[in-house]
Length: 230
Image (cartoon, rainbow, N blue to C red; front, side, top):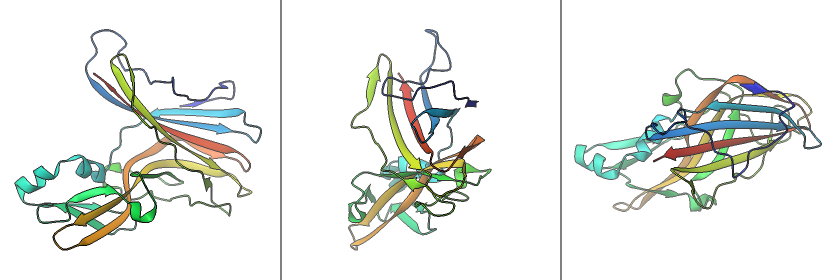
């Protein structure tokens, strides 16, 4: 869904995606929403895009499962990084997962990566189909630091948090964004043999139903809102 330039407002801390049912008979639910704002060189909103997000990857599912599960079935879970290397944990494997401080990522979130490709099976994706790299050269966007909340916001029966990142187009050409993914930087360790490995891991992936064009000199901001109704 693409909304025109008359919508001149940005997402903020008070913005909460509405539940699919707006009555008192709703069920407990988890919602993820992807919002994209494009601003011109003067900071005016010229495009606003929003869609439901529902594409956790196999890496995400594996990270969410407890280590005790792998101990019970006596199997390791293998996480595949964006560079196609593997990190395993679970029974008799590297079982500890934590932020990759070794590479200056004090939190799990590395960035919200954008790309110009698409994939039909997000669950099996280990990287974006055609990542847009960080920079000011041809085909690049300047990635600003990712913004992460310091706490989860609770409003009535809903709890939510928003992560966002902005990008500037200084390439001298129009850049088209058609895919978005959340990248974690994980560091796993096996205390038994002292082995420690780290890497960038794609855990959430979305193909946009309407690609977003960002002209040279413009800025795009991407917001992921995750909310739970109790």
